[in-house]
Amino acid sequence: MRTNQGMLTNTKFLWKVIAAEMPEIQAIVKQFPWARIEGDGGFNYQLALAMRHLLGKGPKFGWWAMEELDPNLTMKQLLLTTGRVRPPTLAWGSILLSDKHFDEKSGWALREEEIPWLSFGQGRAPPSFPPVFEHNWTSYYKWRGLPLKSIAVLLLHWPLTIYRLLYLLGIISSETDGGERRKLNVHCLGIEVRPPSFKLGR
Image (cartoon, rainbow, N blue to C red; front, side):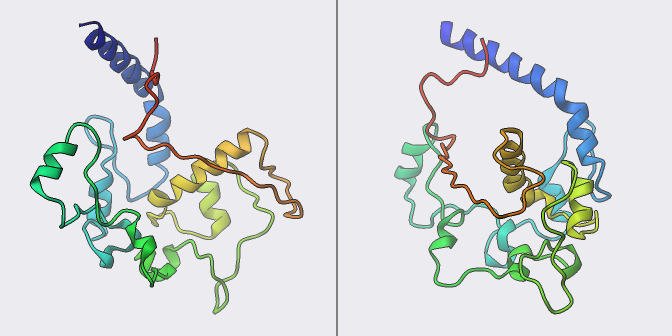
């Protein structure tokens, strides 16, 4: 009973945090002409992909591909893992073990002008260096030469969230000239394995 009460308290705390941040999150979404806010105030990620024909499984969806269950997974294994950890999957991460990887065009699966290219030439000029942009998506897109109709943000938010954290910690400077390089080790802890003492709030 005490555990259930603690979970209820944590859930209420989490929803208070989400409700407090909702206007800021909606303001981010409203920067993009393709994004829509649902009746409950949320953003439907899968609908955004479906509208671009990018919602699905398999290599043709590039980096947008949805997770697939391992076809060799038995029903017994699935039942044993349900409720404790996520079942083993085939698509997420295992593509990195392949002999051939996606190039930028097939990975992004977007129109050429909507891709944040890392390879340049052939009419594609690199963005200015050092990076000069305000820490918002409109400014970043302008710096990268991307139109706001590009949905690249739905994948870019992962690395750029890390970039923002490093900036706030003073590890990355907006005035860096690229001359000094520093090593950073990032330890990722999956949601399936979290510390026993993990708490959302008191």
